[in-house]
Amino acid sequence: MRPHKYRAWSKKWERWFLPEDIRVYGNGEVDCEYRGEPGRFGPGDHIGVAPREDVVLMEYSDIKDKGGKKICEGDIIKMCYGLARVYFDHGCFMVEFDTDTDLLWPYCCKGDDTVIVGNIKDNPELLEKTA
Image (tube, rainbow, N blue to C red; front, side):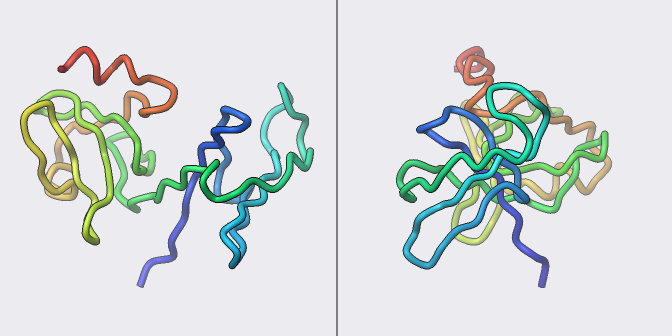
């Protein structure tokens, strides 16, 4: 069984947190600590604990795009059929095109030129172009 890794989008702080930056407690609260590049928060800054409803957890699929980058829920990927949003449903990673949905893995495992072009939080306009 593969280990589960998540990235988190904080609605409160409007930023991403990587797996090493978050801890989820049994009571549902999420603790965020920024360890990335200096910017709005400095490396090692403890940002705080947020209620679960203020944090969107997105799981990594363990499937990689053609550049070797792991594909995660919420990513927008460019495939042979156009742009698609990656999401997790009923135990499967899925892709949603503007008119259809399908499983993710067949596209990435058959030598497709799938590449991550953005995500639903930083680049929502990418999906608006396909609608």
